Image (cartoon, rainbow, N blue to C red; front, side):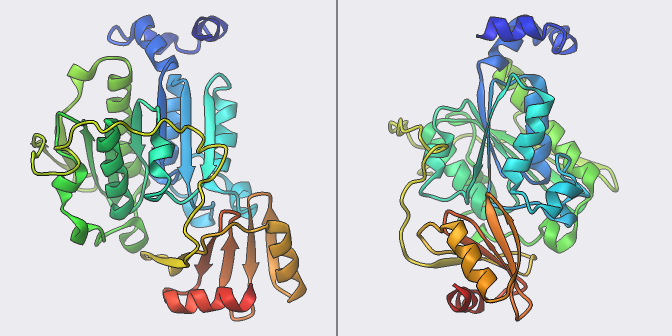
Length: 355
């Protein structure tokens, strides 16, 4: 399979294989590799493009959100048509990436990454790339990567500043040891609160992609092994050596525990707790409410249309403008994004009223 792909597109990777440290052998390793990209926003979209163009054999995309006009300034895989159609980011990205490189197996999952599904999502991949926009999810993903002994390529950007590090189980500390424990899970600055400069996103994504290609082609000795911080506006850059594994940490100090071999996460969803939960999305005037049971989108559409809501509908979600001015974006996995409020109780009450 790998040989036929390389023969059919002998020219495609010629400039990459001429780079001696990759060569034909490295290109074959890329074709055999699988990566998970968590979050397909600014960083994630750029990372996905790099992985697909480089010829990574399987690229898994997971994102809970949909394309909006404010994304187009920095999220390079999306266009105005995606925003008008309210396309889920994972799906819109996969549609574009398939046109870039049809030989790559691109798997898109519209889902909120959580403690119940991250183990299944990451199962069997060689590398996990961080395209998330919040510390809580990053810590969750880092924890699971260290449990499953999968390298985690961290990246974060806000304003014109960015940070990047490649965290290797058994060699470096995990993200939780580097940035703090549970009380650090709420970041002060995000692109929704302080804005973001698109070139800063691309700079950090390029650092992540370069580290990923080193690892996937067997050039792990070339990994940078530092925590890199940059301010692209004033062009200040600082590197510090990554600390070693902490023997006291339950994640980076642990021994392998036999991760699950269930690989069905991209075909079927695991049953969730039926309890309603909510998360206020920082800086977005949005609350995500999880109802714990799936929706039938056709039934939801009929219900909301019958009470006079203005709807935008596609096969992945229903977006409704309700009479009080808020918007409900409903996903079939039982999630609802309530836009126009940062009050979790109000968001839940709106859902109960209209559904």
